[in-house]
Figure 1 (cartoon, rainbow, N blue to C red):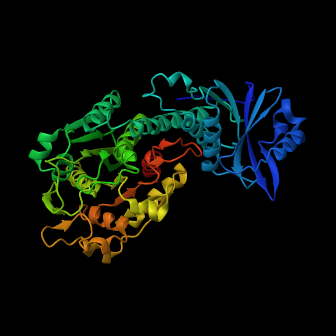
Figure 2: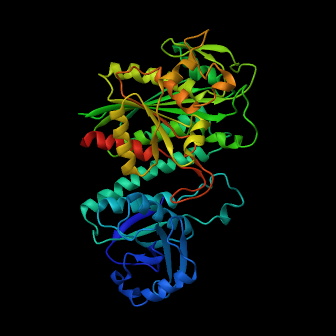
Figure 3: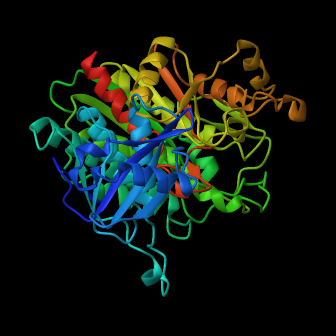
Length: 502
């Protein structure tokens, strides 16, 4: 991960500036008069940019050879010249950082007026300066190393507040990148066991208690969802549970994540096209564990129990068949009409366990589950906006406030009561998909939300985050590279911070 620091004036021979356009007129940010070495050439630079067809649009990065500094990088800020949101700054810094692979020392002179701006720029640099080369062999040397050192030029300088904002950006970004690494790791190397081993090592020194239930324990204790999904694979399932209990905690939350390390669809076999992306089906589990580690590293006074519900959904003589009936932890029975609707089965176990532990510990202020749950989410909201469903509008509003700070795109979705009845199985307490077959496929994201809601008592505030599309980027944009994005980590951390401050 890049090292990010601050200074009041440029130090290096590569400089990043912002570029925007309003009413067809390009503007450089910050104003180059603040940088004496190039102030005399501002008109010339704008003329060069116009000749190059610059628009100042988001994700646009233009390199202009210069003298001192020797190279100027212009990164798009959009169509405004007044003020810039934190997410705009974050994306602009990330887009520039992606293009600066192979460089060591770069100055970022993007607009910043306060420590929040500073933190957003630092996050963008960290997230943009990323690469995943673990499995490259002879071609690894051909890959340019990510940007190593970045200096943010700011009048805030090196104040304690500035240092604090950089530390937070460093911590949160580090755990986002850990999630990216996990998502990008192939299923030949990441399964429920290796996931648990890797994440357990990361808990060292954080004051976190770790519990791992193996396949025998899961079966004996009645975790029918995780067991049934994982029983078809030679890589057995796991429940990875961590507890962070700081002294004098002001709030207590539970995070539950879907951890399907590879999803073949089971006996509802997925088509070959796109199946390679199913290594990302553990994104929710990785996010909830990483977010909890970040909260612990920041020493926030918020108690968290996080559960990664881990299984590999495969086909064999032991795999769950369509129409099998299973018993979820806690006793509810489910008719598995579709083995490819498996994420909700493992989450059901995790949700019931989270409720049980929460009651034992004096109650929960909220439960959040995170999952790459439905293709219907992508149909409804695309690949960059995640969905939020809830049983408590106040809790949803708190989370959406957090996303406004984190910059991650989430959109509230309803849970229409009439959709609940399509899960009424004639043979079990409920079915895992609509009992109406092909005619019941409409509203699939919302039906999945209703399924999960059935395992959470109404009095406990609950959020379901469907991150199916945004968890994996098909191409680079902003601070995201193609591959795992680490979505929801930043928002979960911010939710915990806001819970303390409100």
